[in-house]
Length: 82
Image (tube, rainbow, N blue to C red):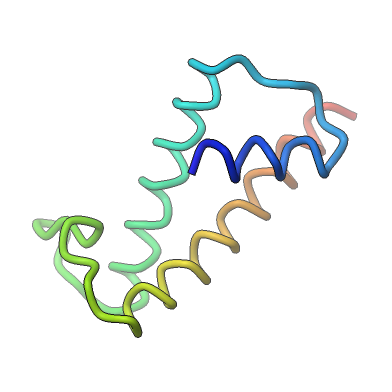
């Protein structure tokens, strides 16, 4: 995931990010993806969705949410840098 995030950062012409910052950003994104998925599917907070992602439908849904969160994350970073 860090590789994909780094690729997206480069594609958006944003400043390069150090490895430890990239790791932190990845963890932050996973947190928001997990919460969004739980909210969209009405799953109680006590369950960790990422630990149970096995079905193709769930994985596709998680990819979609991850893309949305990544776009939102990079959009907010872009707005901050201007």
